[in-house]
Length: 305
Image (cartoon, one colour):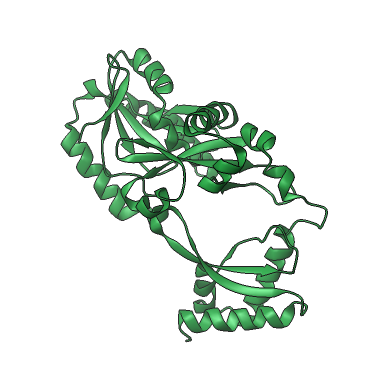
């Protein structure tokens, strides 16, 4: 079996042979959340404004499982052709100030694990987390996705930090509204997704009576943990529960919430969070080992453990 670096070189050579001479095929490392670095193949011809990222790390596992280099190269080209926009597409329109001000949203990341990234991008610190900004892209010729806002973008659009954060908050609440589900609702939703009816209504109701628990996310179920920084959303739930809230980060996509009255010790909750992070959360989706508390009287979030 060839090594991973040999695989990268062979797959680059194979794709280069399949495309026309004017195309350039390169492999470059791409830094993602929490310092995770993935290898991306970029296929482009002169004048291309957009170059899709085709990540190769998972494809090496396909090769280890028996898929040939030529077959993987054909899959890469198919993925490229599906993702590349036609020649009439103008990225300038997408990145104009008018367009981005309607589509900038924020996500939350761990500050320490993204220290290098945060030196390059505008962000707002929040306890041991940071809110970073993205341009949400939907229904265009380059498909759905998001583009990280960097300082050069901010300067080009003449958006100061305060205006950028305000626009992002408004858009996030409008385009990716918060969703708070009871644990029974989340279990039933997951059950439907996997086509499994394991969880009965009686079982989930019993869980909720023993320990009221909620899932904080957004309607898309993607990067919904950013609402840990939204006191408006948290205060509404605290008002309904008539109690402060413990917030347990599950991943960048969601947080678990339990009322303080349930009696769990925050240190024990912290141990549970750390164990789940070590055993069940992908490195790129890790958010924090901390347990947070929403203080309804102060209307603020603080680190509890």
